[in-house]
Image 1 (cartoon, helix red, strand yellow):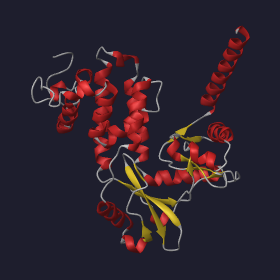
Image 2 (tube, one colour):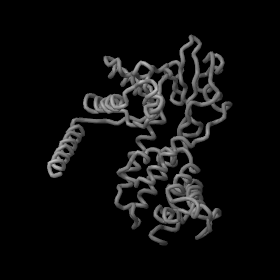
Image 3 (cartoon, one colour):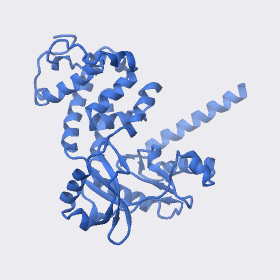
Image 4 (cartoon, helix red, strand yellow):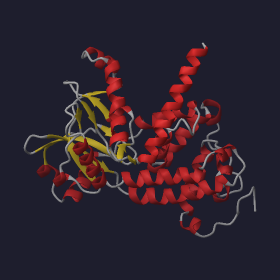
Length: 347
């Protein structure tokens, strides 16, 4: 034994030895020594101690910055985990949250030739036959896929989301590694012991696995479209199933202003307070009147159309809700309101 961790590589660890070593070396590169020992990764290094090859990382960059840079280098799974954690202020301090939020906009696009090849293989037709036009520059790049604008042969404007090649296999391997690292970290004396890392990784695993199936995402979008069918103020994009597979999804293109583009919203004459109220009511309605809710409510997924309609996109992450959860939420709101009333009476 060394530092509470087995020095030999046994069992499933041996099947992923190369990936374990990749992770360990990236953490060494960014001088995240404490994290290496907490996760028990030192046994995968080629030597007992490898001096950092880029010593300026520690002096020039803060720890949150170095963690964000390491996550970017480790690829799809870790970037997605970082993006999810960037919304979890209950888990990480504000300086880490602020840095991980940058992961939403820091990814490089895949070459157009690769994108065209994936689409052709998935939909079994040349891209020129599928679309009358296809925009070469992506509208967005995510950890799992990237989105391009296109036009169907009948003139319908759409967006096409294409899953990156090899993502499913890499995510499956990384999730297995993360589960084992979480178990290791939970037994290691550190600040991370205050969190249920094993349960957190299980939650992340369920989320990521769901996002890898674009057919499931399409059906989720149709569920919400049906749920809001009687509300003309909410727009859920249509799914084009003839152009959709587990790795490619094609949906109606939304033309609107990002909910956080405040100058554009003000220029268009929208009441920001009213938009904030309607946006909050959107999720309240899902949680208290439906069995599922959109579980990725970052600003890039909510738009305001020129007519004032709210458009909700990206249904890869959904959450389940039942009467027990609703009861807890109502109780929490009551406690909060009681506490605030007491505070104002005392002051």
